[in-house]
Amino acid sequence: MHLTTLLEMAAEGFGEHVAYGPRTGGVTYADLLDRARRAGAWAAARRVERVGLVDVNSDVVPTLLFGASFAGLPFVPVNYRLADEQLTAILGRTAPSVFVVEEEVAQRVGRIDGVELVARAELLDQLHGVHPADASSTLDSSPDDIAILLFTSGTTGDPKAAVLRHRHLASYVIATVEFMSAAEDEAALVSVPPYHVAGASAVVTNLYAGRRVVYLPRFTPEAWVATARDEAVTQAMVVPTMLARVLDVLEREDERLPHLRHLSYGGGRMPIPVIERALELLPHVDFVNAYGLTETSSTIAVLGPHDHRSAVAASDPVLRRRLGSVGRPLPTVEVEIRDATGAPLPAAEPGEIWVRGEQVAGEYLGHEDPLADGWFPTQDAGLLDADGYLYLEGRIDDVIVRGAENLSPGEIEDVLARHPAVADAAVVGVPDTEWGEKVVAAVVLAEGCAVTEAELQEWVKRNLRSSKLPTRVEFREDLPYTETGKLLRRVLRDELGGRAQL
Amino acid sequence: MELKPGLRLASTVCSTEVIVVKAPAGPVDLRCGGRPMVAKADAAEPSGTVDPTHGDGTLIGKRYADDELGIEVLCTKAGDGSLSIGAERLGVKEAKPLPSSD
Image 1 (cartoon, each protein chain N blue to C red):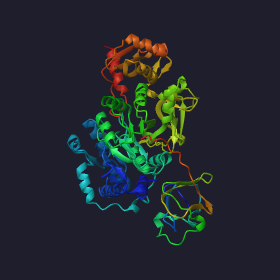
Image 2 (tube, chains in turn yellow, purple):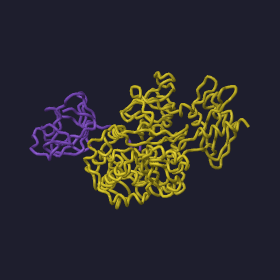
Image 3 (cartoon, rainbow over the protein chains, first blue to last red):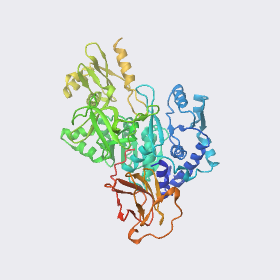
Image 4 (cartoon, rainbow over the protein chains, first blue to last red):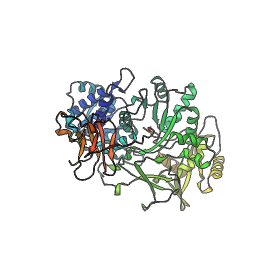
């Protein structure tokens, strides 16, 4: 199945409905199909191998994604916030290619061999003069073609280009979304950037459901709240750092977004106090925690609305703990926890999360090794409880090895974050001559609060065991995150470890 | 005819079009409106009539499947004929919609 088929179905099934933008005057599904066919012909005429985007969110994202599909070429959305040098290097790796860019990108990267840069405004002009690609041109296209190349955030080294083929994305969509299921008034606010897998999957899932999409070009919590209110947004997806900032604005402006029905979050660890606050502040909203990776075409496990409400209402500690879980795997996805040798582990034992399913790609450009039996090792550490709920413990590389003991930074961070004086916390292992590694915490205090290192150590000791208490707690103004909410542990580890040796 | 995932088929007696999601090895006698379906690439304008015993129609976006045979198709264009393998009607595969997560 090809993504262009999904677009043709949407145009056939509800072509006059608005796909992107305001309810009146927005781009309809029929418009989008026409634009995408033009973009397909436009791309095909350039004799390139890839079609990319270095820009903020706009309806150019679906136009180019489907346009590239019509041309049988991969779509490559790239992070516009990268440093000039890194951006230039990544664009160079995609040649021969054409990239639609925001104005200043051309000045930032200069001339790159084999890479044509086209400003966004110029693209729309050029598309008017193009004859749309013939619908029959995609009849021979294979579901094995590459639909999207996504450069991973590179928190652990050189960015890799993850490969998502049409069949991965299409099987994710048809397995998890009922066609045309969105009610007429539904609107999704998309604020994750186009180079994030959730930005890419939002294009196809909302299209298939027939849900209008409203884009927020650049996230600020004030703009998010204003857009959600003004556009009567009914659903949205945010990363954890966005949610905490949105809640601040909602409280400050005494706004409760009565139209909002559904808020999902993912892309990083959600501090329990933040989601508890969200549940309290927005009792009319259904919350969904979604766990997924770029390499798995987005979501592979969800903690649903009912799980959230029953966990927060529960006195049973097992049920209550579920609020910190990412829920259960999708029915179409298998999840196993395995040890370092690849052998499966029983319930409740922590190890590496492995995943298998039709939406799981797990390949990178230049390293297209087939997965053994379809199983993809995520490099995420976690466990499945007896009821099949999945708990994440961070990246395998982030697990702290103290003596012979493996310590999960996530577990210690959760305990620290529950302290009333703590707004945010991160825990890393830094080299230690006696133990190999020792636990060090970086903590951001809540506004107007104070707590000492000794008090936090005592707090951890009371809630966990003594081997898990940080030997040092450093108080900081903020923690280093990527703009999509991933904690930059490597940066933190360098900073905390480096300082310890002084 | 031999089916493979991604292959698009059209009815010869109504406007129904489907795309193959899963297919078993070997030839499959997939019909719409009682008449064998053809590859969309080779399809002419529909002509002839829908067999009234296979005339309940198809709905766009519905998946039709027989898990035992290992066949699943997705309807991409609705029509008046219904889908069958030989004379055996293909049932609608119930979706398990999830709360939207992106």
